[in-house]
Image (tube, rainbow, N blue to C red):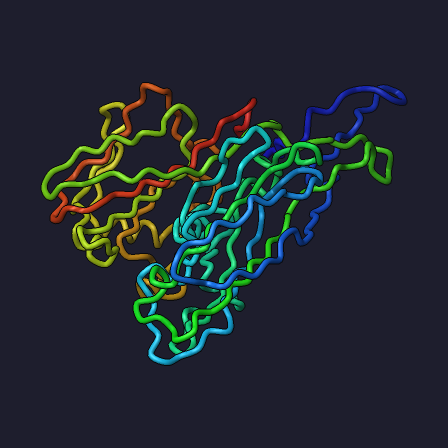
Length: 374
């Protein structure tokens, strides 16, 4: 497989010998630095935090969040269905032009993007050794999430320029109130500490130690991966739902169905069985509900109990286009990306056995130039 980060060799130098162009990810170095460390007391109302400037450095890959609740007191604490991820009621990463690249999302949405986004195989945030679910004593918890920008670590594809301190990326977070996170709240709500780390590529030197010229930026620079979401009402019975965000290359779709009471557990039973996906009136797939979940297991390796560590999530169904290299999410050559235009009709159809809402998270790629591997 060719490395798209390496431009074609040119002929120059002594005796017409080809000059090696060192690929970007070989010439550059990974860089991590802390950028935020704030603590906010959880209360009865949401608290908007930020926006914070992302430190200017090289090429932005992602932002890593370490969110830890401590100091809560009381017994018999219970968690709501989406806890602890829903401790973040909104998060958004804004580019230098003021446009959202990731979000606005809930913390649970970001958890799904981490788990099924194909950034690392088997990357269930619950499997982190630092993760701790909501404690029945005090309601304390800890979770780590990434805010993704780059989508191909092998080449640095999707990493974006972040070297102008006068025009910075922004991160904003809203902390949820206690009654969102807890069914039975602690006697004393915890304080939530948010630490964020910039993960970037350095600017490569002009040449390597052997004098070979180096690629100075990631391939197809300016290519941007967007994560967005739309929530649509669903009636009981047969529905044809047209997805709204078209016009780029579709990399991933995550569907979350919640029943009329707002639960995913009810949504798991109310989701159509079977369900069909259409692209410009052409049938792409018809799944039984069980087979779709088996297909998700096959591409993720998540075989644990539903809602458990390395298990699938109730009411969540993933339609990806990122497994063409080795059959696993993130093993992608981009050949399966689904091309769309503004007029494309991407529709999901089926018989919903209960009313509710369908949230569609769309990961689409706006390619600045050729991104496919030949």
